[in-house]
Image 1 (tube, rainbow, N blue to C red):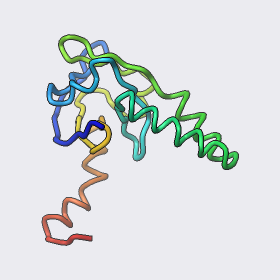
Image 2 (image 1 turned 180 degrees about the vertical axis):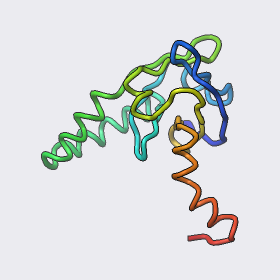
Image 3 (image 1 turned 90 degrees about the horizontal axis):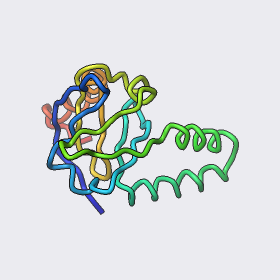
Length: 139
């Protein structure tokens, strides 16, 4: 299974595309899957990791109405994407709106997936943890 780490700053182009860092492109030669994710970001999954996510959602859907609705929303907002020869990946308008992507995009590895963030949202989410790290707290 592919593993992703590192942080890169990019921008959307006029067609709503972002450049996927060359370090991340290998596992997406055959495409990938872009989904809404926790905390208002987008997640880019390899086909294998997306299959695992789908299985988990299917199991959750069997456990009750709230989880069934969560699985519906997740599946309906998932999108198959391709990375072109220049490393660009289109992001559908509804996913850009969900993640607040309208200019700069922070693209970072999140171990089993790649996350795409509005840089301001990212800062708000991780600032407390970065402060803990700089102060030497390990949780």
